[in-house]
Image (cartoon, one colour):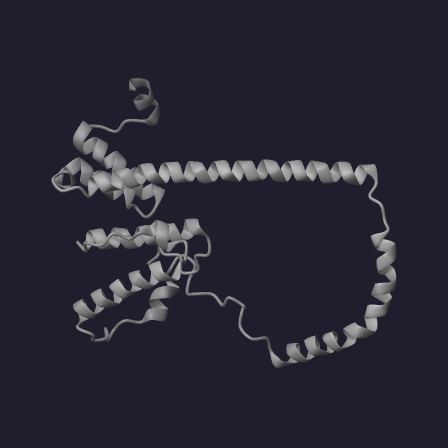
Length: 220
């Protein structure tokens, strides 16, 4: 539970959570592949199908009976970021609503003054310096868009590679090879530290010793 981020908000943190889940499935010999790429997008249908499977598996194992000694809040408190934090999206206190209503009521009285200033603001002509600054910002924005597009394509490229390796690890006969089981363990490791540890242990077990990245680069 210490590896789980119960307050995950970004895609990276969610993927780490699903890696922990998949690792648990593998250790418990539960034959279920977690389609992380779909689930992190938050589409209702994909998540509903996954939760339906989860509920069916729960009912099958527990025969529909609750676990008497399970304390959900206590378990969540030991997570990486503790129990779920308040999102702040709930209804505002009554006093705040009254203040907001008062602000709305006073708005029409301030409107004439704002309206009288509008023509002057609208008639203001941008200086050459302002236009240069705007052009510079537009160029920077376009550069960022191009870089973001490149990062997205690069992410999809490497994800497809990892997916190919994952499918190879799940292929009958091949999945029974000890080296492929180690590769799968690395793929599903919850942290980069765990993956690196498994890699080094596998080097010692099969190759006889650990190899550094520099050594392997020279040999290739």
